[in-house]
Image (tube, rainbow over all chains, first blue to last red; front, side, top):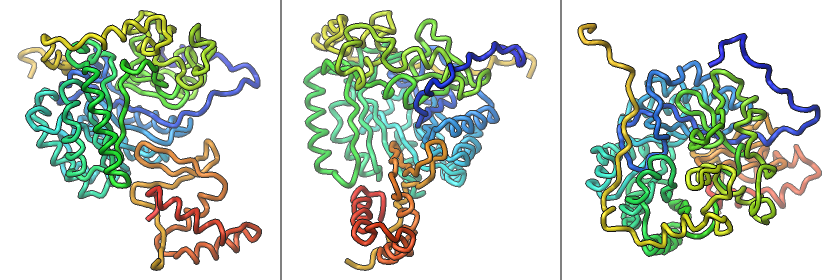
Length: 388
Length: 85
C-alpha cells in the first residue's frame, strides 16, 4: 500500500470528457468468514483473513463515498456478514447516507435481538440462503447443520415485518427439488425466491464436475419454474437466474463492466465484479488508498472493459454488443486464459466448444459427490504457546 | 370502492436521488426511477389522505395539469405493481 503523501498523481480526465454512468448498486463483502462451506461459494479461492478486513470507520467512509457517487442500494454480504460485530453500525452508515440495505445471510447467528438492532439501524430487507428444502440435504451441501437456524431466521424476519427473500444456488444436487424449495419459500413467508443456477468461478469452477447439471434436469426445472410462476403470480416473486453454459448465449454480466455496480471486498479491494480479482494485471484499486470516485471514473481496473472499445471480433461487429457486453470477462479468462476474449458461453465464440462439450457429456457417475467444500477463512495467527 | 387512503407498501422506500436529481422508489432488488411529478404525487400517499384529497391538493399545486383525469389512474397502476396499498 502506498503511504499517505506518496500517492502518485491521479490522471486527470481530459477536459470535457464525459464521466461514465453513475453506479446504482454496491456489493459490500464485509467478511470472508463464514459458518458454511458450500462447494459453489462465490468468494475467491484466496480468502481474506479476518485481521485484514476493513475497520468499521473504513466501511462507514466507503459507504458515504458510495452514496456520493450515486449508489442507492447495497447488498451487505460475505461470507457471513453477521460475523461482523459492527454490522449495525455499517447498516446505520449506509441508511444514513440514503443507501437501501439488504442483508445477505446464511441465517446462522441471526437472533431476535440482533435482527432488532439491525432493523433499528435501518436495515430494509433480508435475503436468506437455503441449500435444499430437505434439512439433511441442506446441511450436507452447506457443510454444517444450519437448516434449523435458517428456519428460525426466516420466522424472525417475518415477525419483524422486513421483506424476506430466499436465495438458492442451483446445481445437480438440488435442481430436482425446485417444487419443494418453492413450497418452502411460501411456507416461510418469503416475498421472493431467487433460483440462481451456479455460475462457474472460483470454488464452483473447481467443483464443476460435481455441480454441473444435465440438460434434462435443467429442462425439467425450467418447466417447474414456468408452472409455479403462473401459480404464484402476485404473491411470491420467482426469479430464475439462467445457467451460463446451456443455451449458447452470453449473460450481460454485471450489466456491463463498470456500468451499474461495484464490489468492495473485505480488505477494501474494489472491483467491477466480485470474481474479477483473479484477472491478471487488473491492478485492482483499494478504498484504503484511493477515493471511490477516482476508482469508478478513472482507475485502469474499471475503465479496462468499460463500453465496447476493448472488444475484438466477433463481439466488435456484433449486434448484441450493447446488450450482452461480450458476456463475462472472468468467464472468458477462466476458460480461455484471455479476459478480452468473447465469453465462451456465446455460440459465436470461437471457444464455444469448451462449454458445448461439457454440457453434451452426461454427468459421470464418479461425480455423485458434492465437490470439495470451501475452506474457512483464516483467523489471525494464533498467539504463541505460553503467551496466553 | 371503499375510501382508499393510499400508502407506500412497507418494503418500498421513496427518496430523492441528489446525484441524478430524480425521485426513486427503492425496493429489495429493484430501483424504480420516477419521472416528472410522480414522486410529488407519491409523497402525498401517507395512508391518511384519500384519493380525492390527493387530487385536490395536486390541482392547487398544478392548476394547468389534468390531475383529476390522470392521478387516480396513476395510483391504480402503482397499486397494481404492489408498491402502494
